[in-house]
Length: 448
Image (cartoon, rainbow, N blue to C red; front, side, top):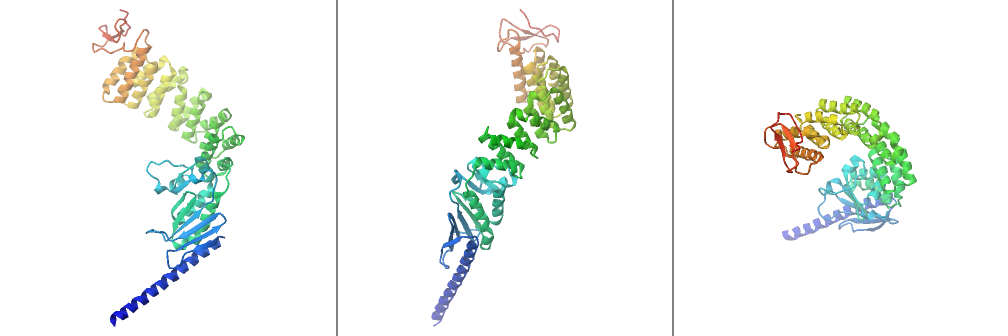
């Protein structure tokens, strides 16, 4: 009797549980139906309320499926929106959360730093750069904040969410899908983004891609001309660089504005010899005073092309006074001047305690040094025999000086281990450079 009662109770319990599940299933399906119909979709199929729940709906070519995901997931339902065939190449678009990016994988960056940090994007660069305008990025950011496991893969947009968020989330998903499916004039959208996007990084990316993919087009040049008045110095710089001679005035303005160190430095480098030397000198003074190292280094490199005594003197002073990378940059520039007056201060710089300056001085002496620099170069190497970079630079400098000697041949110059004194270049036996027994300090090319 007890077993009969227990069995009856079990049946009643099971029936009640099934009824409860059925009621919950019907309630869930009704909420899904309400969400899709409010978005203008037509419900086509639904599951039974007591099984695994799913619903399919459609609006023309736009297909939506809502279902309870298989397996154990953190969320309670999954929404998939089938995107109709979009622009050419859209089937290769992949947009996922950044955390899914494989280590070292290549991805497309749009120029919007927070967006690029949030999403891992691969696919056709032109299409993605044009497609991800400010409205699309805002939509994806909003969807990402309200959902889990967002992805656009193989022409489908999928997200996971908790049951109660479908009504709020679905309109954003449909908007994203419709935007992806629209015909797209890539060149026109790139031009629009380059002019109108609120993010300077995005404007720059679109402008450069437009210039690369559609060079010489009237619309491209118009965008570049407009960008020369952009609020961002970086955008103005790259637009002026792309315009060539037409952008020279903008480059001059950016070089001398020194509002942004990196931009001014790049403008100086882009101008090269087109930046008048007197303006380079004045700009160097300002950059050193304001400690704008990139601009100062660019000016030093520019002065390396001058042979004027005052410019050589300026480079010598900077090399002597600066303790940073600017001293090394000045040494390098001195080597490019080709001036005989640059050799003595470069030899003196070999005694510096700054390794970068020593290396730069050795490299410069490789360009302009004479036999007078050989012994100082050897001594510098001996003082730092455990520094392979400096050792290589000094040896290379000695070899380069050898090749410039009249009548020299490879291997003919060497430093003997005898008493310091006279250097002689033996014409009879290649490879012999002797330190003669003459009074110390005398350096001569022996004729016998």
